[in-house]
View (cartoon, rainbow, N blue to C red):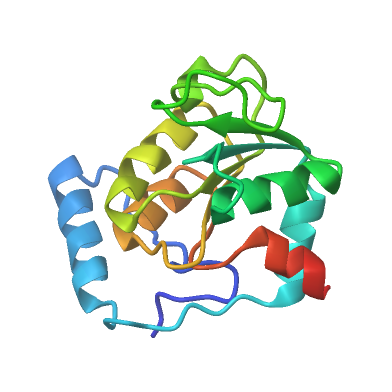
Length: 174
């Protein structure tokens, strides 16, 4: 498929100068409709590791206080690995792993390099919009989180996008 690359779910699309918003939306819908269903998303481990080495601050959207939950385990691993990790969960009013929990990304008063999404796929588009609004560099959707529209929106805004992968696993195997 000419719309895929090893560095993201969607390659760059060139829209002509003066292309109307309607044409842009139609082109986006066409791209998404043409994308094969259940396409395996491939990333090279070296690329993923380079992305993770390029960041310092990570917001974990969907962070949990429950030590049994994957978001808690991944957040703890990232903190232990030296990252500045900020939990985001509108339903949590206290600390998670000693860190203040924010209601949304826009509440955070420091530069966020990467947004790690621990929400179900249907919420990823809203998280992508927030990640764009705070000028994050990377939108990383966890294992099982795949939202092509969110990925397309974020890539068009200049973010690197990873879907269906876990940064903890990448760091452990490399």
